[in-house]
Image (cartoon, rainbow, N blue to C red):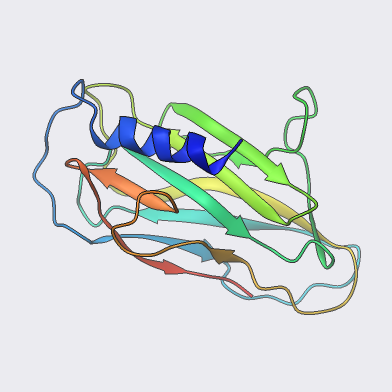
Length: 171
């Protein structure tokens, strides 16, 4: 999938008329990785959770474009071998996963999940789970592409705007 797809998706989610317009606190949702740090022996497979906290806001959807990792140190384990390519495990916060792909060469994950029309998500929980395998020794940062109020990167859509205010990257 391309960045153009993500931008179109964000525009569709941010401006969707089928969704109720909730009251929200601009710039307050967060995305984090849990655990944020760890040390694993070569060959170990371990889970990293992408945690969404809407800070009380009702959200339409979340785009992760992109979550970057060092593909020479870590390998993402495929969660759906029946589908071509590599995917991560989608959480159940929202019913519709519209993007889920891993670029294993570039070391980046594209993931997007949206709420059903007239049914938004409010709260905190696991948006997705990534199982990494440590394929060699070394340090590997896991980082979100994120800038506040930009909808072509990682964002959380609510009230027609990107309300993602912070991300917590991992190491």
